[in-house]
Length: 220
Image (tube, rainbow, N blue to C red; front, side, top):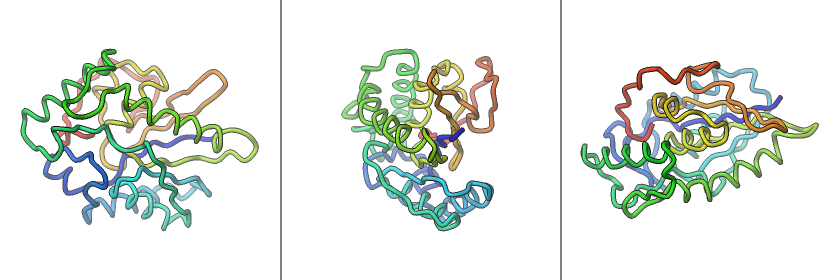
């Protein structure tokens, strides 16, 4: 069965500085982020000839291109897969800005999907642009006799929100389990819907009573 790997991009200067960096094109990879991307590919030598897709953000494209250089696969850039847009909070590093962002994300996981980041997006906005791309990718690449694994390089907050929606992951789990740079969530789709095979380092059954992980980077 083919798998959709939702992969967070490698480390950026904005991640290091804890800067809310969401507008396109965004920061590029650090040297360490580039090594993370190469390591992601090298640790998966049995990947075969997967489909490689990224968001239009510079950091996602660079990550995917480095992965593709190891696998001999060309990256395809798709619209709609960029990070949650933080609007008025863009480029901010303050605790206050981080708190507004995290409080909004918590409200989304609690079901208030119409709540909007000041000057930015609501979760309904994210769903409207992101989910149709996932559906199209699944129909084209994950089903039928020519199905192949897809590695989609995107962004931490968006990946967790979209994956939680697809598989019905409890909010407590999704909030507690952030994604490190080049961490991934692995999903499969059957006629009955999507299933999560791995969330970061966690394997099913997933436990909702875990202590929240310390996330120094607010976008993880």
